[in-house]
Amino acid sequence: MDFIKLKAPTLKELFVREFETMILSGKLKIGEKLPPERVLAEQMQVSRAVVNGGIAELSRKGFLKVKPRSGVFVTDYRRYGTVETLLSIMNYNGGHLLRDEIRSILEIKMIVDKLAVELSVDRHTDENIASLECYLDKMQHLNDNSAKAADAAFSFYHELAMTSQNTLLPLIYRSFRVPVTHLWIRFIQKYGNEVVCNSAREILKALKNHDKAAAAESVEKAICTSISGCKEIYEV
Image 1 (cartoon, rainbow, N blue to C red):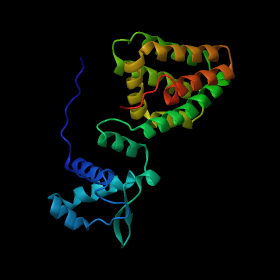
Image 2 (cartoon, rainbow, N blue to C red; image 1 turned 120 degrees about the vertical axis):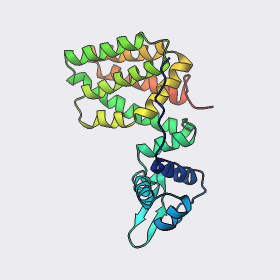
Image 3 (spheres, helix red, strand yellow; image 1 turned 60 degrees about the vertical axis):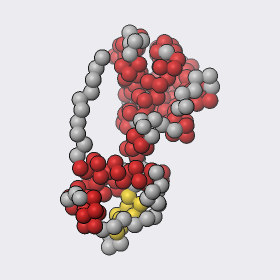
């Protein structure tokens, strides 16, 4: 068994977590103005630098908005957030995603994967196919470790995005690595790794046959069963 290295959070990280919790719990309301940095530093017993850095990070994540000469306000993270905001929501929910968030991620994944395979049918090289076969082979030998199997599955689909030769697709897919891998782990734990491998085999076969319709259908079938079919992966 592998164990992760323990790391103590910094004061800025603690500051950010505290405000994320207050915002996500509704304790701090959208539109609410925060006290001045000096007051926050005094009340929370941290330096102004910690407060300033924490506010900057929360602003980048879409939780706060700094208005010059007006102050700092809680903003609607659903409207102004990023993928990092989704990770904060996951952490707030104990590492879990809610039903709407899972469905939304799967819908985005289907769009990205379908475009990736449709482009890859015409653009793949023998080297690309060899790389995909390597990831598939790795997936097939990880039945006893859902986390590593999930990483291999992510790598397979990221390689598909690379094979598409579209510059943005791999970046988009990689930006969702944490939540997507979380969903892969949950799926494998519930339904087994072989189901994931079978879907990958179908896609790979379609690529080799230059069958764009079959490749897109394989992606859609696999993901739709998790959205509203027989292999849902919503948290209970």
